[in-house]
Amino acid sequence: MMMLAVVYVFFLGLLMFAGIPPELVLVIAVAMAFFQYFMSDKLVLATTGARVVTAEEEPRLHGIIERLVAIADMPKPKKIAVMDTHVPNAFATGRNPKNAVIAVTRGLLNRLNERELEAVLGHELAHVKNRDVMVLTWASVIVIAAGFLLQMLFWITLFGGFGGGHGGGGRRDMGQLMIIMLAVYVGTMLIMTLSRYREFAADRGGAVITGSPLQLASALQKISNDMYRIPEKDLRKVEHASAFFIIPALKGNAIATMFSSHPKVEERIERLQEMQRSMERSS
Image (cartoon, rainbow, N blue to C red; front, side):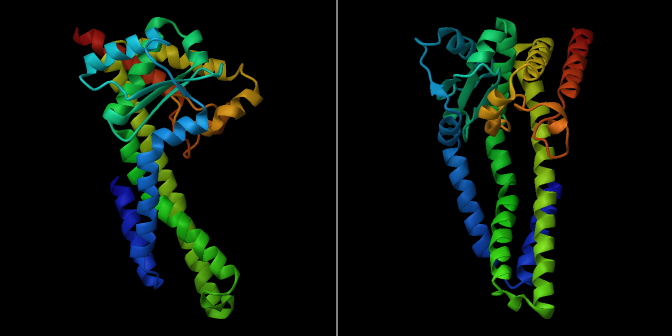
């Protein structure tokens, strides 16, 4: 977060140096972030096709969540939904605990046993309790602003409206574009680092709620292994929601990069196993 603050200050300085009103760019970026923040639950449900289910339709799912929120001393999520896909996964979204959405796939309900499903839902509830949607949305303002400005300057430079596109003015414009691209790159890298940290925190928080780190480790291993057996065409149908999922709907090393929103599954399992050993030593 401190490094993101440095990028914010650098970006504002660049705007003032370039003669671009920073207020205009930031107002647009904040407006976009506000829209994302307040509409996140509706947008994610619409794009994933997840259907809100009642306690009568999914008594097992509602029962587990009700039990977990009582342990965690938090309100029950406003909506509980199910995605009709055999890809095993789950996600949480919503701007605060009172307006949260917890969704699971049909594949997850069929693949995991009761304790593993409880562990995954505990992880998602930890995201809600930690207000991760709020944290990551506001952390993303710098990338939203830089991305908007990058597009604006690209078209202005392309049509020669900013510095004439020739000589010193053109070189200055290209230099500014490169600096803004660097701001987008660094900002995105820092946000993904923050996202990976929040995943570790949700793993730990979920394990604290359920008291079973190894059950979450087992669930993560099952979901990860299933990703390699699911056809590519099925993964492509849900990969747009990978950033929200407990494990990205991707294969291979695509998720093991500095731009991944999630840590490696092996690292998460190792931490959960260490947490279990620590709990056993202290008991």
